[in-house]
Image 1 (cartoon, rainbow, N blue to C red):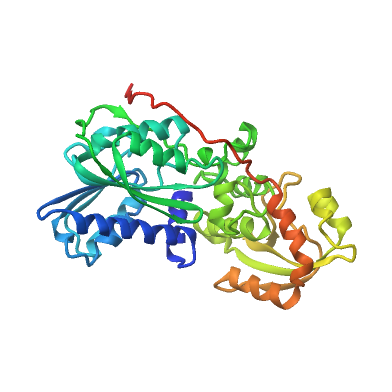
Image 2: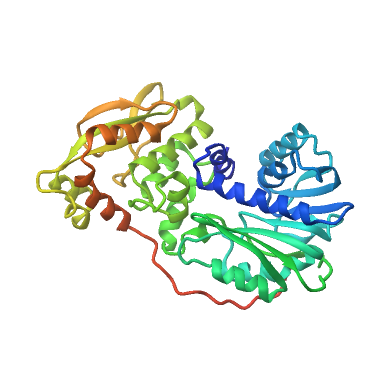
Length: 411
């Protein structure tokens, strides 16, 4: 299973940012269904993933039987899961297909639609494609159609640009709410829609490259193995180690991937999740180590700025790493910091040094918080956490204004 499959696992966590975003999206979908006049309702979902947003909103809704929907998704496994979910919910009118969501031909015979979902798209395209996509949305729409969209607020925050571009394109804003770090919006088409333009590409889905404009090309290339399902274990571990070290604003795997930086907590949790999916025989198990961080050690590992936030007498902290079965033996693997290239079989000892270990349970983040409350001095740790939050932070950027290029014809 690759990253885009793994991404959807966060929907199961009621406290995750994706789950909060999903709740707002489903609310806007239900509101659009409630507003729709009597009769058939057509819907399309661009890059639909596993269809949680539309399928979840339709399940149990009194207008569900009026809806015919096409979910367009390139990942076959996601499409299979969407089909299973639609079938389990009795949504006979929901069709999930394996197709490229960026191509207008993928929507032939399913448009014009009364409801268009563009969720998880606008944060994964270039700035120019962002404008071009918005400018082309009316070609998917029936008159007075509702468009539901999402976009993250990470720098450069283009949510204001999205809202303005939608209004320039003839979509009046109905709602725009925040589920940090995401915005969820709904807009209604107020002008006559144009017909679907066949044989055109609306955008190029560039995924994590769109999230990390502050990283140089070499650094982003080193991180590609995070998302390649064919990468070796050594390549995966090295890619996680190559992520810049810093505490994301939302200290979760989603936050780490969105900002392109992480600490032992997020890096090793992500590594364990992906190892379970790609290398199930490795049986990764998370471990928390309570240890004493001295200023000298912090300087050697993390640099002078973070070391300056460590009290002279040191500070107790909790470090996360994992153990895994590699070539028949269980070894520690700690992907917190870069170092000499890993050979794929030797132990990667915890960079924090010695301490007391506690195996993590089913909820490793909750376990870590318990250990922090039990063993750490919150006031002493506060400057350290602030320094980690400042480390490798994505830079703020000025608002962007981009003219919409025309839809690109297929070669």
